[in-house]
Structure formats: structure tokens, C-alpha cells
Image (cartoon, rainbow, N blue to C red; front, side, top):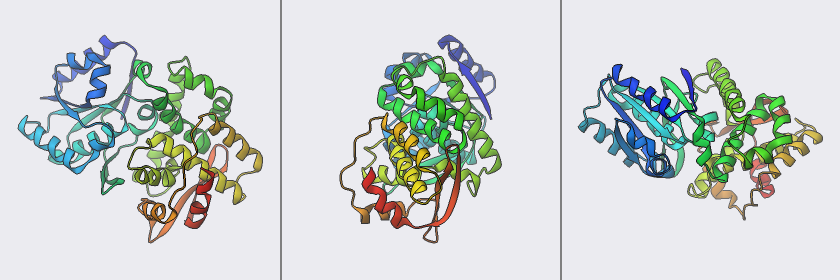
Length: 339
């Protein structure tokens, strides 16, 4: 998989146009909100499908509509699909590209910070089903990921916080130096997202993910650590009918994982305090009473839950994580009070 980066709109348009020489047809999957913000997308000489907004685009119904659209428009094995959007669009685009005609080429142009640092890389594709996030999916890496940094200028602060959720995750599980930088600069970074350091931060996160994915492409072992905070995070998203964003849900999940790592003597009190102070700077509200029975049922859908035994990701120290087998889910349910 190739990573390309563009800072100039004309250069990006010209690069996308270059695929006409290599491919029979170019198809673009995106969302109305993205097209409205970025008028240059309409200038692209491609066949565009506008997906539904938010997590609704990752439904079986939306998938069927897209497959029908591609068939009518004579998409073929020599065509290419481009996904421009956040993680919902890239998850959907990857699954479409993997399943249509048993697989055609696709590339991603992530429009959110979260997608740039995480969702667009690693080859996971997904649809939601029965209110369970990512229950259907496959593994198919894009031909390339194109990072267009000016997208960051149009993101609101909620989207920036969503992105920094995954950046904080990488610092906690793999990169102590990145954590040190974040704990000193997080407020500045959130308030000025298009900054001098964002290029290096994005590149660091991508390199970390690609290194782990190379070791465990199909998520059977070490790749599980990339799901730090996601067991609780995914359950919270489903609990709130996807009205809680992925990034914020993961922040709550990381808060619980860090707390349980401390309570189980895997990290010391100083590390826990530092992590808590960093998360506090994101100013997330306290969640109201969560029904533990309903939450537990949702948590049982976690893909790391095998034979009703949960592989749970915890910290050994800041910058290092481990997989704890058969973790007691009651500990997680009891810890919900801290979020």
C-alpha cells in the first residue's frame, strides 16, 4: 500500500485524473456534507455516488443500493473506486470494493483527522448490522491512501477531538515520546488543528499502524492492541444509537482501560494520573447512568469476545500495551461509573 500526500488542490485533481490512463472507469463514494464543503469534488470527471450521512451509510440497504448503482454504471474489474470521507465512508468503500466482482481496486482520500491517522489504514472494511458496529466486514487494503491536509481546515472541534482520540491511543500503546508531546501541547493542537506538527503526527500514527498490521494482518494476535479503548467504545456507540461519535466513545473506553490497568497494578499511580490529566483536557461530559445489563449485552458483540471470554487490552506502562485473556467483564461494568 502506498501513502501519498498533497497540499495543493490542483495537484490532487490532476493526480486523480491520472487514473483514467490506468483504469476503465473511476467511481467515487462520498457524502453530501463533504461535497458541500469541498466544491472541487464536483470538478472531478468521475462517476459519483452520494452515501447517506454518518453511520447510516454502513447499512446493508446502502450497500445493496451501491452494488446496484455500480452494476448499472458498468463498473468492472478494470475500474477503481475512490472513497472520500471519514471512517464510515472508507469502511463502506473497502467492503464494496472487496465484494463487488470478488474484488476491484480502490483508494482512500480521508477527509477527517481520525480517518487520516487510523481508519483509512490497515485494510479493515465493515458494515453495521442490527445496531452492532462493524459486525460484517473483511480485510482488503486500498491500493493507496492519499492524505490531503487542507481537509483539516474545515473540521469542527468535535471532529478534531475524534481524531486526537486515536492519536492518544497510539501514544498510550506504542509511543511514549508522542504521549509526552501530547500532554504538553494537546490544548494548542485541538484549537489549531492545521499546525506545523500535524504532518509528523499523522505520519507517526500511520507508521505505527502499518508496522503492527504487517505482523498480524488478520487481527488474531498483536493487532488487537490497536483496539485499546474500543471494547467499551464500540458498545457505547451502539448503546447511544451511534449518536456518540466513534472518537469520543473510544476516549471513554481508554479512560476505563487506563483505570483498570491501574487498579490491576499494571501501571503505577503516576502514569494513571498523567493519562487522566491528558484526557481531562478534552473536556468530555460525564455520561449519565448506563444500564449495565444492556451494556453487557452490547459488549458481548465485541470481536475479541470468543467463547464468552474477552481478550481485553490494557496498559503495562505509557507506550506499551498487552492483551489480557479472559478478562472479567464485571470489572468493566463496575468501572462504568468513572465515565
